[in-house]
Structure formats: C-alpha cells, structure tokens
Image 1 (tube, rainbow, N blue to C red):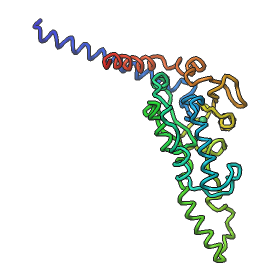
Image 2 (cartoon, protein in one colour):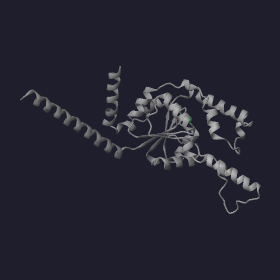
Image 3 (cartoon, rainbow, N blue to C red):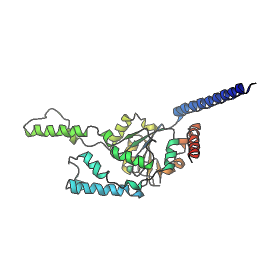
Image 4 (cartoon, helix red, strand yellow):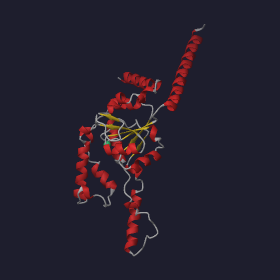
Length: 284
Ligand SMILES: [Mg+2]
C-alpha cells in the first residue's frame, strides 16, 4: 500500500476510535445524570470555601460594628427598624476586608471540577465581594452561578424610593388603607438563615431540594437548609449540628465524607481529571 494511503488509514482509525470514546463518555454522563442521588451542590462561600482561621470573618464583624457606630451611630443590636443604604453598607463592610489573605486553592479547584453535579454559590454577601473572593481562591469558573444579596433583593433601591414616596404621602395626609401589604422597605431583607431565602433559591435555581446538597459553616443556615429539604453538610467542624447530615472539618475532606458524589460519576471523573493532568504537564 502507498505510504500516503497508509497514513490516511491510520488517521481515520484514530478519529473513529476517538469518536467512539467520546460517545461512550457522553452516554455514561447522561446515564449518570439519571441515576445519581444528587444533581446539585449548593455552596455557601465565606468560611465554607476557605477556613475561618484566615480571619476574614473577624475583620467583617469589626467592619460591621464600625459601620453601625460611625455611620449610623447605633449599636449592631439596634439595627432592626433602621433603613440602610445597602450599597454603602457592602462597600464599607466588604470593600475593606484583607483579601490578600485569600490564596488560590488548586486542590479545591480540582475537587470541584471533578464533580459532575451542578454547582451554585449561595451567599448573603454582595456580588462584588463574591466575585473578588472566588477570583482570589482561583475558583471563579468552577460554578454555574452565584446567588447573592442582589439576587434575593433585586428591588431594594426601588423599594426605598417607593417608601420615600409613601412616607411623603402619609405626611401630606394621604392614606394607604385597603392594602394589608406592609410598606416595601419594611418587608425586610431576604437572606440566610430565613426559610424564605432557601425557598427563593430553590425557585431561582430550579432545584429539587431532595437532590441538592447544601454546604454551609453556619449552624442556623444548616437548620434552615434542612427545613427546606436539602441534604446538609456543616463545614468547619467535625461535630454535627442540628439539621446537619454530615460534618466536614474542611471542604477539602469532601471526597472522604461524600464519596457517593463521585462513585456514580465513573468515567466522567477520569475524563475531567486526565486532560487537566496532561495540560499541567505540557505547561510545566
Ligand atoms: Mg459562611
């Protein structure tokens, strides 16, 4: 056989083989999606994707106290009932955090990328803080989406304006009788640990709570997550809290504690890990 024809045959054979392998992986992944016990992983971010010991939480608490005392001249315990400019609040509280303490976490990145389920961040923080933390940890492309303060409270600014108009109408002798809906800005902010926030996330992300694993470092959030129907994992402690199905000292222990998340994935994990390993070798 001429050399050119022989080379062509070998190439065709390689392409056919590669196609068959890809087809096999694709079929496996589809059957995995149908068989898996869980199809979504919902992660809190602060003190869950990085340890409490970094001191970000401590700095955040201090910034909140400073904001209350210096900007609002109130104690933190008096905050209920006060109208807050949340953009200013987040800029002051989160904008001044020691972000330099957060370092890229390639181990967690590899763990997340090897998980075949949907992965979503659910944080009470604002989107600017969430984006900055994920970027610092090197995890910005590991999640399908971020549900943050602005997601759950999209109309805060509009509500504030409506409240101002309503207050002005009241001052002019106007009446809002006939409506049992509270004034918009007094409805309160939607955030963890309220059950309503969990239900909002289920609706926004179109989750099946029974097939969702919820990771959080807060005992109160875990209890609310359990009430919403999630499989719950408390992170940052080896002791179970009320409503927690699993306790993880560190998010890095996820594979040891929840191997079933990978067991059913089969060839998907190998498909994800193998190219990454090759890439690392080539780049090095
Ligand atoms: Mg947290």
